[in-house]
Length: 412
Ligand code: HEM
Image (cartoon, rainbow, N blue to C red; front, top):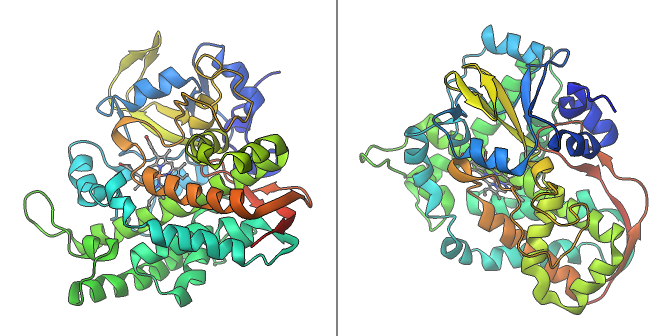
């Protein structure tokens, strides 16, 4: 099968057919390949586990500061001819040394011990979403469960009131809707729509920032609103806002798609679901396996900071690399029977949370959120079966199903 770069990167193709696992499988066995797809920036497709680890571990050679997604020609044109000056950079778009300085602002909150204090929020939320299903019926599990659970958890730690949650959900869905017309914000032009979206986020988060500065509490919102950098200077308003945005936006759709991926995997592998019900202590390995197979962050872009040789290829400064985590997670040189969903898989060196410098800041929180939902499922979901096809969001960046209709029966 001839591989077309658009198979790897076109949002529309992901919307129509989901991730291109067959193309990745072929690419993993070939030398690194350069693609120049119509209407997109050209890129080297990095599909092997070892190559992604190496590139991620060399932030001085392969940077994030030039952007983390491959742009369409139209997006690249808008970037080079901006009608809105973009002043805000979040940590994912920073490089050393700034990146380390800014990451430290919140990294203490997201350690395993820091996350322990969120146990109650996370388990209460997981129970509430399963309660909301009633005892039996048919529902879209994305709408009822997988988007609600991370929304509740992240809103709580960021100080969003329950009545604002749905508005926040709409904003983040529009931001990550990729090119999905069903999810995009309406506006005269793309720039106007994006500006309106940004202003809505700003209004919501700024009110919280001001409130926490006046009335500090024991939460992440306060930590960000009152944060200082290593040199003792306070975090500026734009940087504080950027932190809110990255925590919410990086945390919501990723966790949602992992949870939806968990349901998909259990629906396709009922024996594995029975295994979890029989032995709920498998939750820990199950969480890793769910992130491995669902891989909601499909790829991140890196840009070469200088001319260099990588894997025998001459690389020019400015060349772009798409690190396909979803492919690395099925690399047959690292995982036995990689397409098999095995909730006891160990070791499981997946790259679903990335690697090295930019390793996911929220990984422990994501694990806790997935684990809490698995606990509820193992204890209460007596039976479930698909009630229709799952269709994918038209996005090649944060990837997952838009809907997942399921019939079910729940106890207690
Ligand atoms: C299953 C859910 C999640 C997945 C699969 C995921 C995946 C990722 C990946 C692949 C990266 C980039 C790593 C790299 O480029 O090397 C990342 C970065 C990041 N994630 Fe997550 N993430 C998840 C949940 C969360 C949550 C819940 C939060 C926040 C509460 C979060 C916050 C972040 C932040 C702030 C970064 C940027 C880190 C940096 O640049 O230093 N993520 N995540």
